[in-house]
Amino acid sequence: MNFKKFILSGVLGGIVVTIVFWIVSMVMQTVLNYNAMNLDGMRAVEDPLMMLFFLYPFVISFTMAYAYPLFNLQGTIGKKGTRFGLLCFVLAGIPSIWVVLTSMNYPLGFTITQIISGILYYALSGMVIAKIME
Figure 1 (cartoon, rainbow, N blue to C red):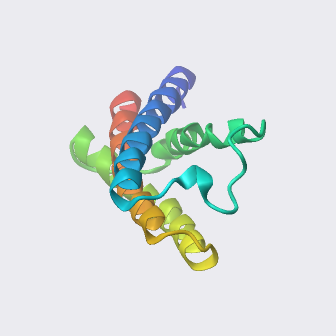
Figure 2: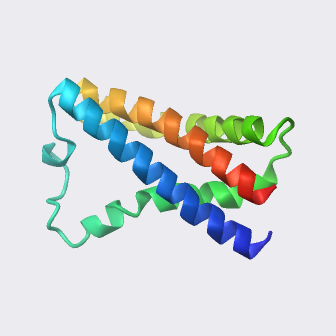
């Protein structure tokens, strides 16, 4: 694996995940009238450990950048990236959403936000990673 491509993919993919997640979250929280940071079970934003929560987009993107070379996807870079991103959503996003949906008393809007943002940011970061890695 090319280390520079791995680092660049992880950083740019993380930026994509962050931007998409925050845009979708802001829109959905406004439309569905809830605040994810005020849900029971969430740490206070002031808690120092919450800094790690905000690194989550980079955990996703570096994991994806590591896994991308393990797949031999066919097609254009855009198709490869989209397929890879959606595969990651199916393997990681859906189980995570399922756990939260079935075990937490969060509003349905939270789950809807997770589904929409997840599909978008996994697919878009997959495209970014495919473009850099190819």
